[in-house]
Each structure stands twice: as C-alpha cells, then as structure tokens.
Length: 290
Image 1 (cartoon, rainbow, N blue to C red):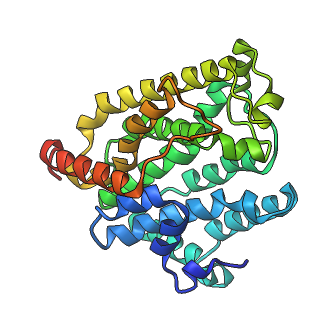
Image 2 (cartoon, rainbow, N blue to C red; image 1 turned 120 degrees about the vertical axis):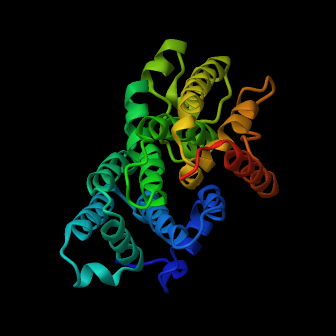
C-alpha cells in the first residue's frame, strides 16, 4: 500500500498536522512519549478517513479497509510492519494493551463513507460518531492513563458524538458537492428537505431547521460531556481537548445569518490555538490529579 510523503519516515505527527489540524493542535498539549502514541492513533484515523478521496469507486476502498483489518490482526513482524503508520500503531496497541475491537469497529463504520447511501436516522448517525470520534477520545484517554482504564467511557461517548456531529455540519457543503448525505433521513423527512436541493447547494428554511435540530443534538451531547468531565483526571484531559471547539462552532452554525454554502462555520488557526490553550489551562486547574 502506498503511503503519504508526510509519513515516509514514520512521522505520524506530520500526517495528523496535514490532515486533521484540530486534533494535531491537541497533541501539542500532550507530553512525550504519549504524544507520539496518540499521534499514531490519530494518524490511523486519518488513513481510514481519507480513503474515499483516494479511490475511484467503493471496491478499492473495501480492499484498502480489508488490508488494514488484516494488518492489525497480523502477527508481529512481516509485511504488516512495513507501513509506517501501521507499524507505529501496532507498537502502541502492544505497549498500552489497547483493545483491537475499537479499531476494527472504526474501519467498519467508515465503510459508510465509501458509498452514497443516505444516513438512515439520528440513531445511526450517533452510532457512526461513537465508533469513530468517540473511539478516538477513549483510546487516547487509555494511552494518557498509561494503559489503565481511565473511567471515561461515558464522557468519551458523548464528547465524540458532539464533536462528530459538529464536524459533519461544518463539512455539509463539501459532502454535498460529492453527493454524500450525513444529515439523517428521518430529520430531513420531518422538515421536508429534498436531498437533491442540498446537493444543489440550496439554502432553504427547511434545511436550516434540520441543521438547527442536529446542532441542538450536538449541544445536548456537549452538555452531557460537561456533566461527566469531573471523572477525567489531569493527565487524561488532553484526549478531550478537541471538544472545546464544539461550542464556538455551534455558535456560528446557529447564528441567524448562517449560510452553510456561502460562509461555512470556521475558526482561524490562531483562534483555535487560543481556545485550546485556554481550555488546557482551565483543565489543569480543575481536573483531579493522576
């Protein structure tokens, strides 16, 4: 399998910086050696998430995903360790005793990305978010806890769903251009939104109402995250840092003049870094010790 030039030397951090800048910023608040370990987890996510962009139709994507499944389950050594991200990730899994199932579930969930099928329901969307974004939060938390159970499963579940829904709302114009629909069909039906109008970039009152309901759903999960954040110890807190972007992004998405196809919700890199720094500083004061 071909690898990105960014990871030709096994530099997972560089790959995350190039493909997932928000999570890259959170890594700046993680000390070594955990930074490299969490970067390997995020780099794996990047490799899986970008598959749709690298293939011309679903079949090569399915083959790529099967390669990753086989690689993660392969014995030590051999061809599996020739891929830099796979090698780093397999070492992290062994070093911290990470369960293999969440990685396999993430691959399975991302199979949805390869096709143009509609997201059936809000429950399906939350399940997708749980097996992708929430899994990354929890796996990172385990690494930051030194391989121990950090007791953060519920908080990670809600945090990941809030983060993922917000991210999908931000990416609506991009997904629409390639005729992918992550807005759940049950919500679209409730407001009478025609998916073809979304693909055409039409900003209708019905679409804004559907976006508003999903944004409210993300806020509800953010609220649940905050209700459980007290269980997150200080060393584990960086696993949750990306969630600090959810509220300011939702503020933009829910603003009266929001136009998703004209001015998508964005935060400058400097603004994001400042939010991370402020949140990390607050977490260091409030979170319980190790």
